[in-house]
Amino acid sequence: MKTIVLGGGVVGVTTAYYLAKDGHKVVLIDKHDTVGQEATNVNAGLIAPAHCFAWASPAAPKMLVKSIFGEKTSIRVKPTLSPRFLWWGLQFLRECTSGRAKANTLAKLELSDYSQRKLVEIAATEGIEYDGVNQGLLYLYRDAEELELGLMKMELLTTNGQKLERLDSSELAKVDPAFAAAGDVLVGAIHAPNDASGNSEKFSRNLMARCKEMGVEFKFGVTAEKFTESNGVITGLVTDQGTMTADNYVIALGVGSPFLSRSVGQDIPVYPAKGFSLTVDIKDKSKAPTLGGVDEKTLVAWSPMGDKLRMSSTAMFSGYDKSFKESDFDNIINTAKELWPDSLDWSTAKMTAGLRPMTPDGPPIIGKGTKHSNLFYNTGHGHMGWTMSCGSSALLADLIAGRKPEISTEPFKVRAIRK
Ligand SMILES: Cc1cc2nc3c(=O)[nH]c(=O)nc-3n(C[C@H](O)[C@H](O)[C@H](O)COP(=O)(O)OP(=O)(O)OC[C@H]3O[C@@H](n4cnc5c(N)ncnc54)[C@H](O)[C@@H]3O)c2cc1C
Image (tube, rainbow, N blue to C red):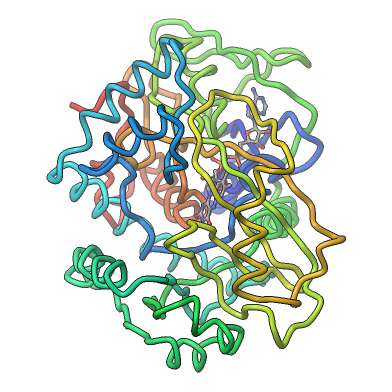
C-alpha cells in the first residue's frame, strides 16, 4: 500500500512514522528543504494537556469585540471581509456556549493525554532526542483573585483526571529556583506536574532519520497544488514537480490543508492564527527557568530547549500574513526581563512568526473524508499541535488499518461544519 503524506510538520512526520510501522510504502512531500519549518519550528514547546481549553468560550466574543476596538486582548482580530474568515468566524461564535466549550475542551484533553503517552513511547522505543523536560509546567499568576479564578477554571481538568497543584510564591521558587526573585511580581502558580516541554522541530528532524531507516521517502522542495479524482477516488496529486500517484493520500499541511481539500470539493474549517516566537541563548543557567510554562497575565509561553529559551505570545487572526515588526516582541521581552533578569543573551535573539492551524471548535480533523475513499486528514491542531501530534497520527493509522482506536475519534471526524 503506497501512501503519500502531504506536509512535513510534526503532524506529517508522525503520520509517516505510524504508517511506515504498519507496512505502508510512505512518501512524504513538503515545499521546504527539510521537515518542521512552519508552525512546528516556532511553537513554545509546551506539551500541555493542562492548557487544552478551547478558545471558543463564553468569554471569547466580548474579547474579540474589544480587540476590534484596539484593546490588546489575548485573542485578536484584524477586521476583514474575507469570506473564509467570516465562514470560520461564524462557526467559532456558535461554539462559544459553555456546553460546547466544555465538550471541545474535554475532547482535546483526552487526545492530549493520549498523545503525550504516544510521544514518550516513540521517544523511548526509537531513541528520539528532543530537549524534553518532563517535570511539569508552571502557570503563573500575578494577582490572587486571578489565581483563584484560574484554579476554578482548572476544576474541569482536575475532575477529569489532571493532577494540578497550587503553589504560593515560595513554593514556586522551590519547584523552579528561577522564580526565587520574582516574589514581588508573582502571587503564585498552578503546577501541572504531568505536563512537559520539548522541541518539536528537533523531534521531527530526528524522527525523520528513523523514518528513513524504515523506508520512508522524503521529497523536499515539492509544492502540492491540487488533486485529481474520478468516481470518489483520488487518482493523483498534482505538484509543481509533476503528478504523483499512490493508493492513499493524507493531508497534513497545517494552514495549507484547505487549499488542497477544496481542490476536490471537501471544505474544512482551518484558518490561521498568527503568533510571535523568539528564541534566545541562555547566558546564566542558574537564573533561567528549568521548566516551561505560561504567564497567565501577559500570556507569554516559554520552554527551555537545551541551551536556549523559546518564548511565544499572541494569537492574531490576520489571514496568512506572517510578517512582524520588532515591537511585536515587546511583551515577550518585557516578561522575560521581569521574570528572569540577567539570564538571557539578548544579542542572540531570533524573532519570527508562525501560523497555528485553528479549527473553530478546537478539536483537530482526523480521519477519512466523506467524499473520497482514499483521502485522509490529519490537520487543524491549532494551538496544541505539538501536544496532540503523536496521538493524532496513531489514531489516523488505526483508522486506516481498520483497527479500533484507543480513544474515541468521533470529536475529530472530517467536517466542513460541526453538526
Ligand atoms: C506561536 C506558536 C506557538 C505555539 N505553541 C505551541 C505549544 O506550546 N504547544 C503545542 O502543542 N502547540 C503549539 N503551537 C501549535 C503547533 O506548533 C502547531 O499546531 C503544529 O506545529 C502544527 O503542525 P502541522 O504539522 O499540522 O503544521 P506545520 O508545522 O505548519 O506543517 C505543515 C507543513 O506543510 C507544508 N505545506 C503547506 N502547504 C504545502 C503545499 N501546498 N505543498 C507542500 N508543502 C506544504 C509546510 O511547508 C509545513 O512543513 C504553537 C504554534 C504557534 C504558531
